[in-house]
Image (cartoon, rainbow, N blue to C red; front, side):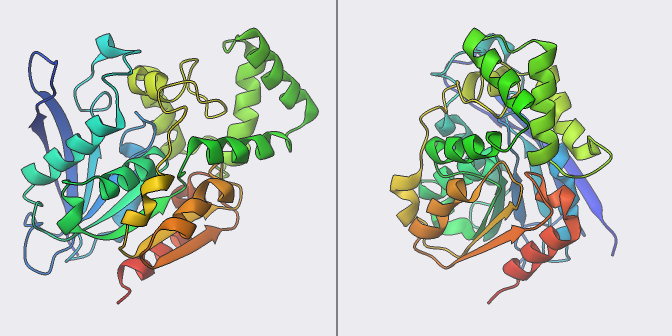
Length: 319
């Protein structure tokens, strides 16, 4: 099977910007006609915000003649438009901005009337859920299957899961995290070392650490933390506290609007613990399948790549 890649950028008009922004995309498939009859593209939504698509490239394993895989970098990082002057502007960096960007990209790629499957990882799963429940989006008539990978339905659920994982850390690590939070000092070597311990237990179990995919995500945060620092954590790239605009986020009241077949995936050691994922299972009105992969943390597609892809492949092929 000959695999081809098509890359490009589409303009994205954002109110308040002096010129259109640009969303970069990559389509991996067996031909360049991803709107052909019988074709169902799989659209991948990356996490972060700001982690970019690179760490999710293992999902090219899922390419088939009738299934191109679409990656893109969300506005604010990667190969899309960077807006560092908007750092800290919570009125600009909203979930709705990324919902509109996704619709804009799909329309530009000619996928407005084409059935698509969507896989959202971590923040990408949050975005996918909001997109799927927002009236007027292309999800209403284009979304065939939804995959929510290592994500969360509310920040309250996320915090509960993170807190339970913190309690299992060595006492010295717990102490370093607690002292940093009390002092609001998130730059000390002790804090950075403690975060590293947490990540090696709950971000990815692949060794040697860090796996290339993990490093790719961390590198993008280091290059431009605008979206992550504004929406997730003002104090640096850490999953352990949520101080940005997403701090009170929830999609639980709207989950009943999702009436399509949905797959949930997380890892046994995932920072996206079951308590964070459970509302998807309980509230989505369509058929829901939940797979937890043993021996995997937040990057299930890296830690247990073959099993992750098998679960997605079987799900997408379900009648």
